[in-house]
Amino acid sequence: MSYQPASHPDHLSPDTVVVAAGRPERGHDTPVNPPIVLSSTYVGTGTVVDGDRAYGRYSNPTWDPLEDALAQLEGATLPALIFSSGLAAVSAALSLIPAGGVLVMPAHSYQGALVMAQEMAAKGSFTLRTVDIANNDEVIAALTGAGDKAASMLWLESPTNPMLEVADMQVLCRSAAAVGALVVTDNTFSTPLVQKPLELGSDVVLHSVTKYLAGHSDVIMGALATSNPEIRAQLLHHRSIHGAIAGPFEAWLALRGLRTLALRVERSQASALELANRLDMHDGVEKVLFPGLPSDPGHVRAKAQMSGFGSILCIQIVGGEEVADSVVQALRLWTPATSLGGVESLIERRRRHANEPASVPANLLRLSVGIENVEDLWTDLEQALAHSAQTISSTGL
Ligand code: PLP
Image 1 (tube, rainbow, N blue to C red):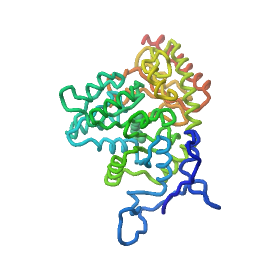
Image 2: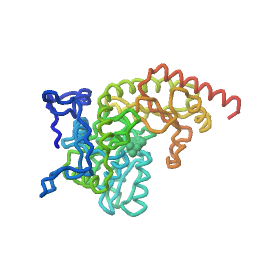
Image 3: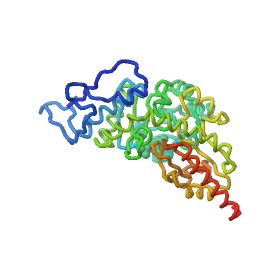
């Protein structure tokens, strides 16, 4: 069974691509949506296996339209590869590092990716050099090795989770290429509508599809996209052999979620900027981390390489971690939960996770701004911050 995409005019804008890509070929009475195919194996010719779908761990027709749409959005010339989770995609990407190689990674990468890299490095798979990804000199020194071994891979996450540091992507991609290092960019926070890592020089782009792409906090999935056939073949082999594949239902649901990505991103980004500006002037907030604020250290870079500033912002609460916890508990519309990128606004104190690096401030709250009415979101934040101010004055915190 093969998936034949419907043909569309060339050069559609990305907010049309999210709607139009991954549609089946048109014919009288054909469905407008791709069907869900539930089959663990496929009828073969009885002779060769190569080139056939063969088995459900190698391929599924429900994956194809989503992989096609993700590739189009990221500007990859080959279909993307979807995985059972974002971390499964991280694992496949890290498998590209040769034994004994060197990985350069942001010290504030998503903590799951960081822990995986730390554990693999501890077992001797590769050497890990963590860096302040916003500091070009430090990253370039780690890439060249300064007398030691040069890097095999540069991991980029920009803005980082949760410190929202912005990497100088083009400069760092060029520096990585100069030492022969592959670049993998986790583009989960920005989405391909806001940032295009392959155009900025990255070899591979990674997504936790769980977040904005699927968008409704009901799917766990990852994806990788590249235009390099050898790299894609290695990643596909890793997926087939390690078996971290997405279910057909999840693939269908993620494509359905993707259809509204442009609307969701537009709305949540506008709200995030508005809330960041208001929070920046609030007495209960010590600091706002958000590249959309002109005062933010990442603002100029973000403006140059992103078409917006994303919908995640972090705030440090006056009074420390207990007060920050009391703000979260006092919220009634914002949901206290980990994760991000869904239609509903989520908030959490990141250091409540044991693995979160100690360099992430204990009073830092990460806000994933959803698509609710911005005034409702603000009213809830204001009342929770007022509640925490009362806590400070009554307990002397
Ligand atoms: N990358 C980033 C930036 C993330 O925030 C996450 C999850 O929070 C992941 C990767 C991992 O994705 P998943 O939870 O789908 O495994």
